[in-house]
Amino acid sequence: MAEFDITSKTRDGMGPHGTQVGLLRVLGPAHVWALGVGIVLVGEYMGWNFAVGKGGAYAALIACWLAGILYTCVAMIDSEVTSTVAAAGGQYTQAKHIVGPLMAFNVGLYLVFAYTMLEAANAITAGYLISQVAALTGYEGELNQKPFIVLSILFLAWLNYRGVLATLTFNLVITAIAFTAIIILFLSTSGVLGGSMMQHKALFEGAAALPYGWIGVLAAMHFGLWYYLGIEGTTQAAEEVRSPARALPFGTLAGIMTLLIAATLTWYICTGLIPWEFLGDGTNGSVAPLFDAARLTGSQPLVVLLGVGTLFATLASANGCINDASRAWFSLGRDKYLPGWFGAVHPKYRTPYRSIVFLVPIALAFALGAPLDQVITFSILSGLLGYTFMPINMILFRRKWPMDSIKRGYEHPFHPLPSIVLLTLCAVTFFAVFLGYGTQLVAMIVFYIVASLWFHFWRYRFVARAAQFTMPWPRPKGY
Amino acid sequence: MKYAPPKQSKLSQLFDVVILMTMTFGALYVPLYMGLAGGAKVEADPAKLVSFEAMGLNATQTAQYQALGFTAPSDIPAVFARFDYAINWGALAVMIVVIIAYYALVLRFSEKEYRDVISEKFGD
Image (cartoon, rainbow over all chains, first blue to last red):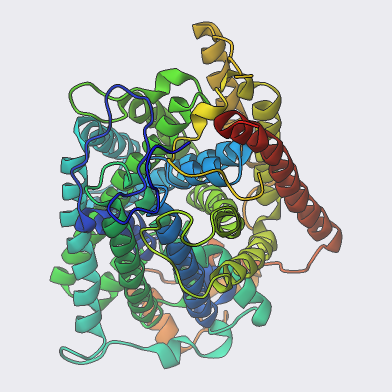
């Protein structure tokens, strides 16, 4: 039983974990913002435009806002649960305390694969961008992108290995530059500064706006998630922030607001300059749409700025992904859900160094061997499975520990409305993925079913039972 | 009574990681190598790929393609392919069943494991 009053207003939700060396508590709300926005902002620089391909320009905008509602629900739910279950592993640790071990194992895998695939997608884009810069600066021939992909991942893994403060301070700076680049491009092209270059009316003529009709709007939700995917990763910093109850809700909710603005501006700029067919194909057409939009302005400074912005966004995202995937893997190892060897903290740098190193070749294997849309879909599907878990988690959390039975750092309003909206939008998105990528969806879920059976019937025997429950909470209601 | 997990050998730990990684790579690469991954698309009519006008694009759209460095749709035929959204109801039913079965399985086994955890943590 808890040895103190958990309803106390002076103590946050941290519990003991039995490790000899803990992660270092050095981060503030700005770092949480940088982690969340840093991971996601690359979604405006690449990937979101597949939504245009699946449904057309208006479909991508509707998807942008519907996905915005979905992620606002995610942020609200996450802020309440995480400010109470403040531990590395984020949603994994939440699931372990609220739903049960097998759900937690699955959520841990969702997190690791969503972030590792996103990291791979970032590295692919960084390699592509460098090859484009080489071509624009006069290099003749086909530049080999692979060394740049490998170098990007290795450099960022090294940075993560050396310490979280430097890692996320680096993210704060490059994320701020990448966000500013979008604002400057908007101001320069929309008519706010100088003449407008926007050609929405002419570019939306004919079938361009809604080429597939309303089913295209549904289909676009698949990649609509990419505008924001990863914002929930702020929870991974829970054990490294100085004040989880304050920093996590503040950083997460400020992050989702930043992304809603960035996503809408990005849609407005790109659809006003780039024909939808080219914009909508992120593999053979516009791999880096904001960079392509800058090219179409004919302004060299904007091309350089958005080139730098794209590169920084991919690096910030990959950096945050390494941070988050390794924390999730580390947490699985610490609880023996995976071999305990991964649960080690570096004695000097206080980072989950074995998990960081282990995930490097996996990210490389996907970055070097799979097409961008497949990698993105793999990441989105893992994220989507995680978002479907969240409303279940939230409803059970309120049921097992009603209000005032434990201290919550943040209490989200209108419960259970955000959970219901989130579950509904997740169902819509599953259907959206089915439209065009159904085989991958089924393959992915079959993977999670097999992994679940493996965990339940084999792996779970190595897990101590009561030791998993590390929060100083009272017994859940109904158990 | 408190559950005492068995000690796992290093070789067994390594084997567990290999199993998990094999499943992961299989989930992505098996559909990829079997040609089942990716968007279900219909190629554009080759006869229309000769010019932007033939594809039905207006002057502004054509000008933007030219500004991007393309002289004809045949330079980038893949971007003019279209998704096929004809719904296969059987496949949709399979997907729904698989998703529901997955969450039902996970929640059911989780509940059983969770009761053991709570029972050991707080006593019966």
